[in-house]
Length: 486
Image (cartoon, rainbow, N blue to C red; front, side, top):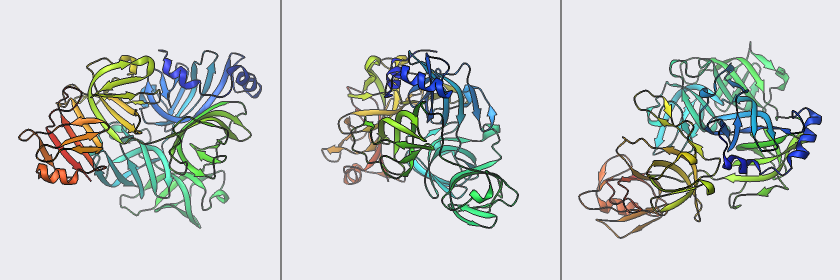
C-alpha cells in the first residue's frame, strides 16, 4: 500500500487521540489491541491504490468486499460509489478495512432522460435521478444512456421521488451482479393493505419477506424493496423482499467518518446523513461556513460514536462543483495539494475523486491508482471544480486522453465578458478565453450556429457556456468553439 501524506492529514481530523480511542474500542470490541482502534463509516470512493473513501486510505489486503450481495475483487468498485466501511486504524494513522459494502440506491430501467450540458436527470422506477459534474458514469458516458437501459445508481435520497446520483452503471453483460433484480430505496408515502408507494412507484408486497415485520411498514418509514416489474411505465414493482431501514448503530468509542447528503435535519444537534444520526453542535466547522445545513446538503464528518449517535468533532459542508476546466499542468505541488494550469491554482484535497481514464477501444479503465504524486508538468487534466470566489477546489480529477484533439476546455458560468462582438473575451473561474473572427465558431444551446453578436448578447454573468481551444500563455487563445448551455 502506497502511503499518502494527504490521507494521513485527512485522518488527523478526528478529535480524540488514538490511545484513548483504542482503550475505549478494545473494551467494546471495536479494536484489535492497544495499538489499534475501530473505525467505521459511510462515504464516497475517491480513488484507488488501496481504496480511498472520503480521502481516507484503507488497505484492503484482508478486506471482504460485497457488491450487490456478491463477494468481489476491489476492481468491481468505482470512484463515486457510496460504500460502508468497517476496520481499524493504528497509531501511525494506517487504516485497514475488514469489510467494504457497495451501497446501491436504485436499480431499474431508464424511462426517460434529459441532458443539459454536463447536467441532467433521468427517471427510473418513477424516481427522478439527477446527475451533474460530480456524478461518475462508470462504464458509459452520460450521452450514451438511453430509455430502456437497466442501470444501477449509487446515490442519496434527497426527497420523495428525488435522488442525486454519485455513480451510475449500465448493466451491460452482467456488469452489475443480480442486475435483473430491481431495487428502490426511499420513504414510504402511503400504505394500503398489501401495497405501498415510494414516491410515484407502486410496490406490491403480497408475498414479500418483510424485515423485521409488516407492522413496521408505515408512512414516513425508510425502506429498501427488491423485486421485479413489467416493462411498461406505471407497472407495480412486485416485491419479494422489503427491509426497513433504521438508523445505523455501532459500538461506543469507535472513530467515525461520514460523507453523505443530509436526509433528515432537525438542527445541528440532530440530523441524519448516510444512515447515521449525528450531533455536530460542538463540531469545528472546517469549511467557510457559507453553506447552510439542511436536506440534500453534502457533509463530511469526523467524530466518535457515543450513545446512539456520532458526536462530531469536525464538519465540512461540501459545495457541489460549479465548473469544469481542462488544460495542461503548469506546476505540481504535491506537498501542499495544489496544481496550476491555465493561469490559475487549484487545491486538490485528499477527498478529490480521481476518475480513471477510460480507454476508447477496450472500454477498460486505466490510471486507476492515479494520485497527485503521479501527475507531471504537461499532463492534460480535466477538473470538476468549486469556485468559492477566493480559491478553486477540485472535486474530481481525470487525466485526459491524449488523442481527443482538445487540450483546453472550460464549462461553467460566465464570470465576465470583456469587449464586444465580433471578438468578445470570456472569463470563467478566473480563466480567460479569447475569440477571433474566422477562427471561433459559435453555437446556441440546441447546437444551432449563431454569430458573435448573438452570443455576446446572451453571455451575461452566470450564463453557462462551453469553450474549447488550444492552451497558450495561461489562457485559451484562441477559442475554436463556443456554445451556450441553457
